[in-house]
Each structure stands twice: as C-alpha cells, then as structure tokens.
Length: 284
Image (cartoon, rainbow, N blue to C red; front, side, top):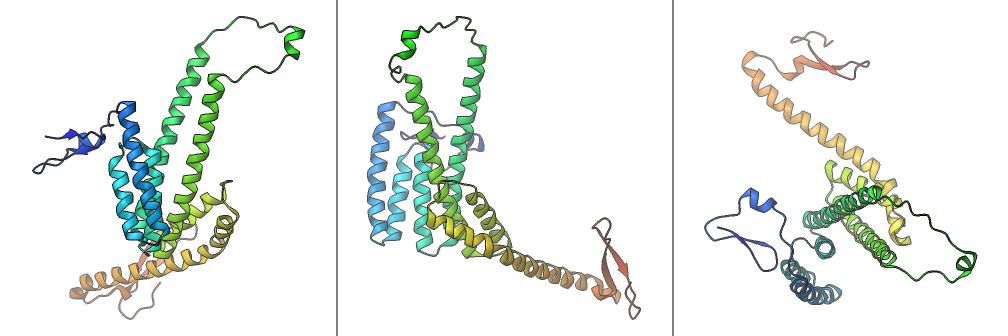
C-alpha cells in the first residue's frame, strides 16, 4: 500500500511501487502553517546550497538542493522550479550536460503548470464577472471628481501580487532556458542543437534578459544554424550507411546489393521512388 508523506510527496513501500493512478493524482494541499514550516526549512537548505555553489563546491550544492527539493510539497511548482534551475546551473559547472538539460526541463515544466493553472483561474474569474449584472448607475459629483484618489483596494493588491508573480516566473524561465540551451549546445548532436536553437529563439522574444544574456542569445542565433545543418547531414549520412549495410546483408544471398538500387526524388511531390538498375546496367 502507498500513502502521502507529511510533506505531500507520495511514499513507496519496500515491496511495492506506486501505481500509475497514484502517481498522477494531484497531492492534497497541506494546512497553511504546515506548508509554511516546510517552506522555511527548504529555504534554509537552499541558502546553504547557494553558499556551497558560490564556494565552488558544486557536487555538495547539488546534494543540498536535492534536500531542499525533498522537503517541499510537490504542488509548490514555483519553489521547485527555482531549486531545479539552480541544480541545472551546478551541473553546467561540472560539464554534466545531460543532467543540466534534465533539471532545466523539469523547472520549465513546473513553470508551464503554473501558467496553465493561472490561465484557467483567470478564465473562470472572467466568466464569473460576465455573469454579474450590475445595472446601477454610478453618479460622480463635481466635488468627488476633484477629491483625492481612492485608497488601494484588495483587488488592487491582488493584481499587484499577480504581476509580481508573472515577473518572477519569467525571470526563472529565462534562467532555465539559458541553462538548458547552453547544455544542449555543449552536448551536441542534431536533436540537441535543434533544441538549443529553439530555446534561443524563445529567449530572443523575452524582454527581461540582461544585456549579457541577450548578447549570448544573439551570438548563438548566428552560430547554431550551420551547426544544426552539419549535424543533420552527418547523422543522416550515418543513418543511410547503417541502412545500406543492413540492406546488403539481406540482398547478398540473392546476388544483389544496395548498389543495384537508386533513390530518385520527385521534384514535384518531394517524395522518393526506388529504381532497380541491375548489376552492370546504368542506374536510372
């Protein structure tokens, strides 16, 4: 059997793993005071990890960040995204490109969940307002019009909080994208280089980058396309080479080889057809 641990994370017994259904369930939120206590504990661990990172002790920092992640309830996507983005930065320092990509991607996935939830909440709020029927006419006297502005309302404070939240999400998104893009570029290969180019294109549309980061983005947008093309051509050639070796192994008992066939591209449709040229006959 499985259950939820006090921090909202699913626990697994020694002899049985969680079922798929259990792992996809949304964890219940903790009581505010309990959540605040766990958040304080995680922030203390994060501060220790930050100090280790600044001291160049990147492996130790990763371990401490992992402790901070383990403390947090799984529904605190923003706080978890910050920690995972920091772990990605540690892996970059250690030239551990795959791990850096994985952690940055986890951070971005968490931010995506936040934005989807916020969008759904805004949509529901908008629908609720549309249903309100306010037919009262507001009459403002000349004296009231000259009076001092009304004090901020709870709604104003909530809007200010939402604006700060959006800015924080964009800030962490930019950091995670920069880290993933660099790791993908360093790891290389057609898929990773294409992914890096996509990340840098996304970053180029963001308005909150520092001048140094924007300079890096612009440089990579110039440098990456030829790298992507070269990697594509290399991997395509390698793939055709492997297919050719496989084909030759199959055709050999029949006295044939892949040299007896030629792929011909149809310029109108962009498709390919295979022509058989025989042994010594000219390939069509």
